[in-house]
Image (cartoon, rainbow, N blue to C red; front, side, top):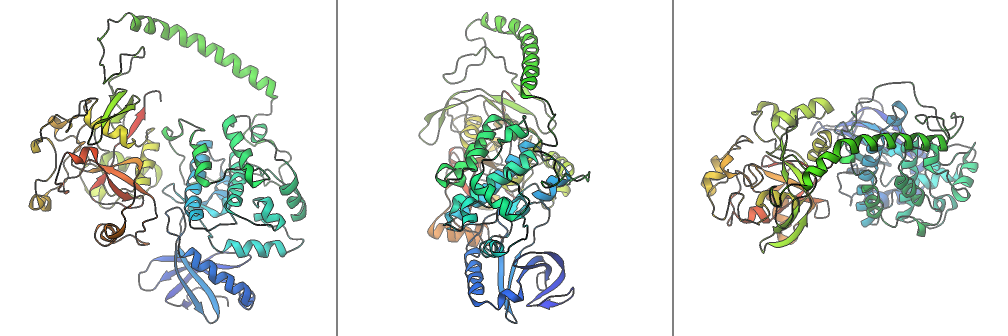
Length: 593
């Protein structure tokens, strides 16, 4: 059954057609009760007549219904309309990475960031026993906020089988199929990781690793041919990334990454400075479309200069030699002066002695001033156990509404609820973990880890409160009881200067909870039920105990703690996709970036 614009289908109004594929058609629909736009996937009528295939489709719907992850387009409902199988899915605005890469080459740091998000979603799905089977850039949707949603979960298993039965027809997916998919042998999660590897190869180099004049030749290439190393296609690709991609493309699943988390962990070390660089705008600028793999005359990356590798390395060596001479001329006098400094003349933190590298104690940045947290032993937790922490910078204050609105204007992100109406100097709140991370990347910073945050708050001596050992309510924006919490409000990010930490960071206790980049154990049992019912009742899909949770630290203006000191060393778990009026964040930055 084909639907027309304006048709009513099981409580939904058809608004338009989003696309069609081998298994069915996808419509944009409006929920007649909520007015929310959603996506309706309809199994083609000729397939609905095949009971075995229809049964498999229903089983896939049930599996998809068990998935609840911010990197996976959610299933809202499943219907049967006049013997027609229908899925109601989350409508995801944005552009898929295949289309985006044809408009403009995607910077390498963004390729890695996007693929890491894909791997986060796949890792969750694989843990649920679900294999996508049709991973490709066309199924990776980039939202206007810079986040990835994996599309077409559940449908791909049947779709892949159907495509392999068609002869003489070139499909898009065979470019990304694993050898075991092509050969029809047993497929597990490592097949998805192979497809991720092909996708990363394509996004990083601009061409597919395997090509052929038809489906048969392409299948032979997938099962028998070694891919050209990515670094040969684009010499600017880091050697580490080159090896990661080649490992993902191993023919033998046992030689690939065994889990999505292992793959994601390997990518995390490729570009150490990646998190500090601004992300590209997610609104593409139309340019001349890149040649398709079939049209490309060779495996030369469109961005790569056509020079010999020997010439390339000679040029790089010459440049590095000149740079080294200049740096030594500038830095040697500083190093000599530092070595002549009398012992103890610099700030000494914990057991860390003064180093030969002179670091400024503060940084004045448009996105928020930062203060130096000197490396050394931190005394953390209730028991003040010793933990070594490297030197880093941390924002002097929570990120403000003013700074976050500037980020929203620059990137096209929709501002958090009511933010434009709030004082510019107040901390920004109602931000998710991902939105906090996106701001930090845009600002050339990152979120602090839990250990870093706690050291920034307590100093090297592990003090109970940022200012000392005794609680003083006049030094922090925390309520003394529930009555006070009901009338409390955020204070400006620069308020309570007398409560600053040993490094000069303000409002580490109270004002707004702060996201940190450390995973948290989700609540269990009755505690989870309370979370779901009272803390996050408005989340859609509903809160799940298996989705990612991160720590928040420091308490807030409206949170009443039995022991206020615990707000410094203890943490609360918050789902990654949640945002509340009490949660904000501050950024960190490595000293060498």
